[in-house]
Image 1 (cartoon, one colour):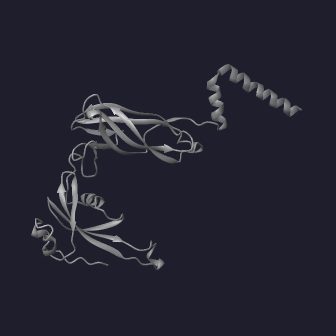
Image 2: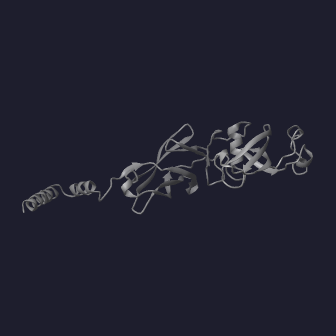
Image 3: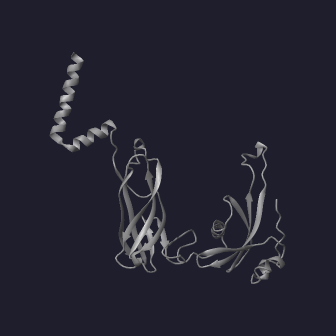
Length: 261
């Protein structure tokens, strides 16, 4: 009976608090008991792309945000911050429960946020959340091109390791492919690509073995970067000149026959 009396007193106190403070107290009690979780302002996990709309007077930002069994995102907003020195700065935000593990927002979803510009984007770049930069230069409208390691406007094809990585990424080959540069100038690039095949192996001590498939790719410089043209594994220039006669002899004369492991 004594314990029951204590419970009644505590319950009465809670009712008094609820009656005196209204809905704000209800929310506080729900959060304290785990029945609800707080909403927090956040930026997208990742920006997947930007494109123009409404004749260039708007931007549509494709973004990745949290998702789960409950509502994980609300108040998605795209806003124009400022325009400075040829760059349009925009901000994409939303409110989310994902910072609380109990909310169950462990998945992701793709959403679109529209940003009104008021005037056409023209040739200006776009920076989203002070992080990702996009440009119409070298892009296929209405999409904008994501600026990478080699710059933005334009992305120059260079005889550098980051530029070779761009070339490999734009080639229709499996992931985890390595490369060896065989020749490069302002217009042409020759890479030997090697892709490991077979079962997945761990350390060399595991006793498993795998083979590799090699290809020699020829690339041409374009405003948006190196673009793959053709492949040929013959020694010297005779083979490649049958399909790419404009390739300078200095870039193929010393090419060895491509070994296939």
